[in-house]
Length: 116
Image 1 (cartoon, rainbow, N blue to C red):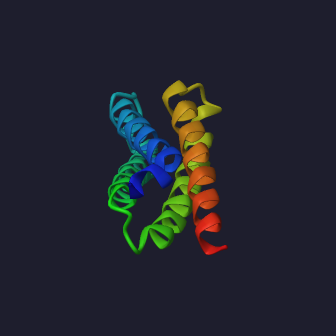
Image 2 (cartoon, one colour):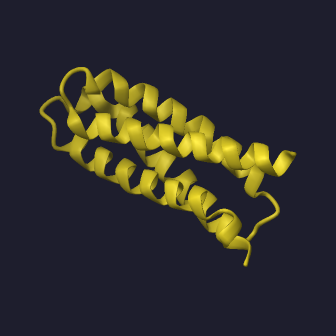
């Protein structure tokens, strides 16, 4: 089954998407939402790419490697933005950044394994 080859990466993408949705929702509940617009936007974009990558990998898709490289890039950008707010005490941003980094690592590992 094609998806078994990508199992760890699929799980990392699904977890990241969940954490990004949670982070965006939690950011919307913060006092200064305007200060968090970039974070919310990146959360939503990251979740969308993670969900797409997981779906394509579950099919054993031909573009899985390229999509995972893009996924790693957006995950790293989202993590960087979330880190800015995590230092201000926003736990949801810290958790999101952690999930994004794990996903980026899993995606790059998978992409490099496929390229070899």
